[in-house]
Length: 382
Image (cartoon, rainbow, N blue to C red; front, side, top):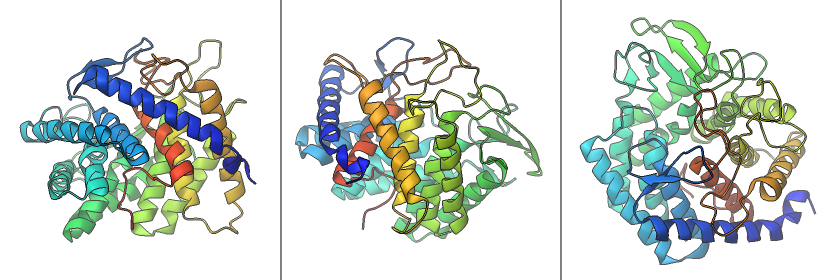
């Protein structure tokens, strides 16, 4: 029996603990959403950032695991708020539409098959399409022509593309897929370096689309490898392969995963940047490791049993989940987060060592992928 199978009883205990904490958060905070702080807590407030979808995604995961209508009801109430947010265009001038609406409305469509969820997800995909610029890229942040961000793409966008791929399938309109494919190809060409590390961000001329330079926003420096960005790349390229069948995306996902594995510290959980100077106070990012584990599990679904890379990926997933469950999962009933020692924006001084709602989501997704075959909300299940 391999190590992943041997972890089963511990995973079940971890899932039960996570479900209890998600329920407690929902009961205590109503229809508020978690925001990041520098304390061991969440700041609960309005639906007006890029991260709220992960909270709703957790509710859907808990519903699928338990069958408890409480979680389904809470998720649907939150979707009502996402519908209001889209109608009023509240803080949606960015590309993270997939994170927001993929894990809320699209997830609701996957789980319940309700037409109004499907329609809201397609409306969100339409809004994401508005981020496509004539110079040939999806602009990450800000309005068109923004002097700082007008020509910027970032690697995070790869996890927003599944909403577009799916919209093409749902509507029969290939324009969604064409844009997603172009963005994925652009990201592969310019965000992935020759040594299989990655840039967080890349800039293009807003008129001609000519490449200018790679850089970072949240990494240690422009030439470093921000670990969460590397993890986005692993999962994002694997998902682009699922939707397109283009072998180069799967190969890129495997290469990024290999780089991630080779640069992990002894305990198997990433620091916030693979090139950050190490010291007693260097921040970890448990959320990056949770995302990477999900990405590796996605890669494994596409590899034949005889593939020579399977054993290495399976061992990496096992090592990561061991480390997260035994050293990073929160202990104690009062903890609001599922994972401790995540980091958000170390250079900006925000979320240096605490709970990250996306880390919570991907941690539970990884557990449920392994234990129940529930793959999250990035594609329809057939």
